[in-house]
Length: 295
Image (cartoon, rainbow, N blue to C red):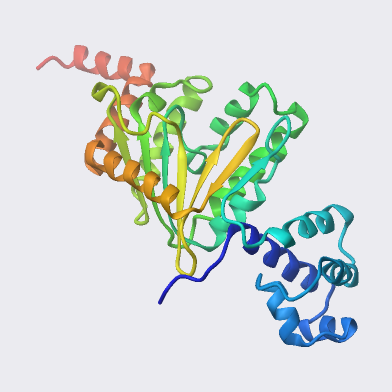
């Protein structure tokens, strides 16, 4: 079946509206009756097909008694639900919860992520996350706990059978985020994740030098019902790329990374070597054992 014509803005508007109706303890029939609308009209609005003025949508939100901030957000989206591509500017730093990413992760069928300089968010331990956030100059210290919890919740959205492929540059694994225990724990976590049936980890060797992913990290999401999108994060903004030519460009990068990356077994072997090198106490014990039991 062909993919539905849909945009990230439209899906976020629809999800927000359905949540508002449910949160008010109402059914679609209840809302349509209060507004004197046909149920078909309400369905069109919720599914991003238009059919109502912005004032009418404001009345709908009023019936649902949602807060001012959420109401303003949904009203800003309504006239733009047909627009593909979305550059979200966050101010000084990203919000605690990346709503658009979370909502699209929840309905995605598969994820492919590329990262150049650190372990991808979706594979980070809580300790590694905390060290990354502590090093960030724009994140308030008072938000540290909430941000770690929000990011862990984001990881949970990948559970349940989503196919996940991660391309990671080798230099990202050499970056010692946190102390020796945090670093070793993160490498061990990667080895554990690599055993999951739906998770593939591929390493791009540093010895290859220049590579097709030098422009930076990104994540592609594929859906059963919708066209794919690519998510790109910066310090204080996020880009949702949805145009077909843009997606085609990112897919060329992924194919090139696939061709030059170590295979799964080789990638695990590299992570094991780095993990072994990160545990000097264990190495000393092994050396002592070899010395006391010469062959």
